[in-house]
Length: 78
View 1: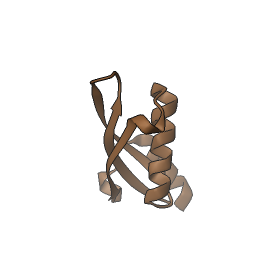
View 2 (view 1 turned 30 degrees about the vertical axis):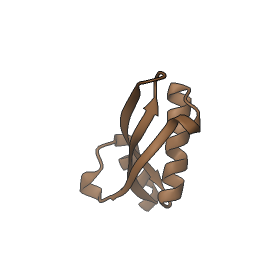
View 3 (view 1 turned 30 degrees about the horizontal axis):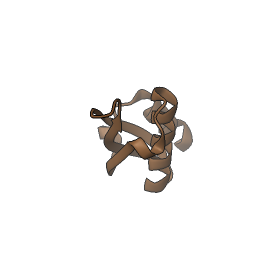
View 4 (view 1 turned 135 degrees about the horizontal axis):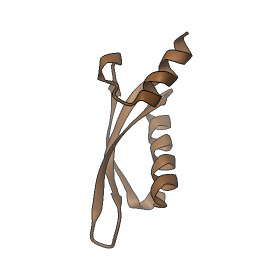
C-alpha cells in the first residue's frame, strides 16, 4: 500500500464549494480516488457527481500527516 493526498472540492450548497485535501492509504491512484468519494459521501452526505477531484499526489513517509494512514502503512509493512 501507498499513501496518497487527494485534493478537490465538494458542493455544500447551490453556489458554494468546499475545498478539501484528504490523505488515504490505497494500492494505486484509482483506488485512492474511490476511497475519497466514499469518505466524502459518508461524512458529508454528498453524491459523487458533486465532488470534483483536482489532483492526486503520492506521498513519501515524511510527508504523511494523518495518523491513521501512517498506522495503516506501518502495520502493512510489519
